[in-house]
Picture 1 (cartoon, helix red, strand yellow):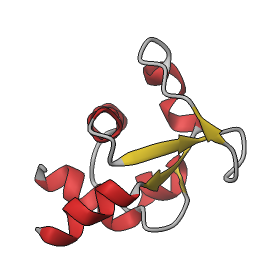
Picture 2 (cartoon, rainbow, N blue to C red):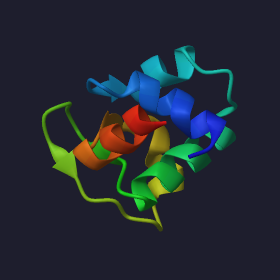
Picture 3 (cartoon, one colour):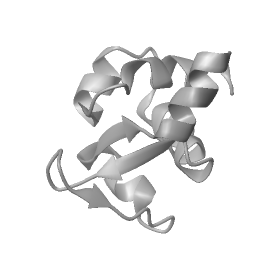
Picture 4 (spheres, rainbow, N blue to C red):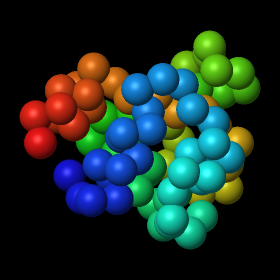
Length: 85
């Protein structure tokens, strides 16, 4: 897990909107979306959309266009890895 991914995971113990995540991060939108994409691919976080209670399937082809619209939450697997570092 990269330093950026670790910092993002720190914020995702609870459902977090992209704007809230962005406000706590020093990453650019492009860097943040890339890190989120990597964490999703590893199974460490999941997407919620259109509200914080509805899980949304990851679509690699449209994720970059909608990255800033989603809510995010760490998965159990992601928390286990995050807490073991």
